[in-house]
Length: 280
Image (cartoon, rainbow, N blue to C red; front, side, top):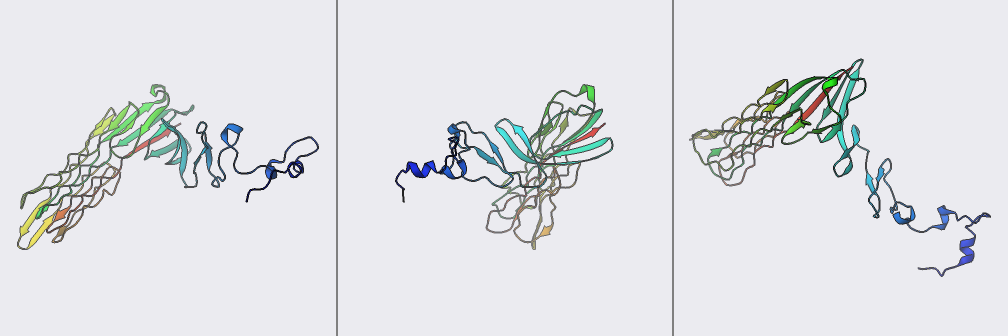
């Protein structure tokens, strides 16, 4: 219930210098306009971010291996990994980040791998879809004097890049809802790299084949490879099946196969990655 205002009770919380004890004399959270956070609780270990005149927002940081970095919309957390020793350090990025050149750096090697394409999905009987293409790759070597200021790293699904210096496109998705019977259904093309000292093309997705109708058998297309490994696998089967996701960075997903009623989905392509190796 609401208590009647009582100045004598409030006075008991004021010291001899006329200062109010904030720990016991205030009620509810303090608004931002009054110098507070606007929050009643904050998760242990979290960071507080400004939100103008609104209550501050909480940036959780309890997941091991994550770092705080700036983005176009403010601060964010994202996974990153870093290993090093002696005159070498490696950083692997699987989400957008900003890389800044260390002052003692001598050279870098950057490996960019685009995301994998997805295998074909379908809702047509007696058809096996092709696999998604593997992501392209670009490998770049640069001496420190040739490296510009902070570089935006784009990493994850789709096109991956190390600023304007080098990039790799994603593998293409395989066609959906194929209708061919006993004919190969083509997979997606591999992505390509550009801007690097060496640029490579990802492997194309495999064809989906309807082997026979009596007995009814088929093999969907495998996912295309990237330079870091294989895409989703495929197998000979006589039953409806979804595609298998790409298993390594940049690997394409395998296609689906349909023998009877039901909609089937192709395997998703694996995300790409940007690896920065620093030499001191």
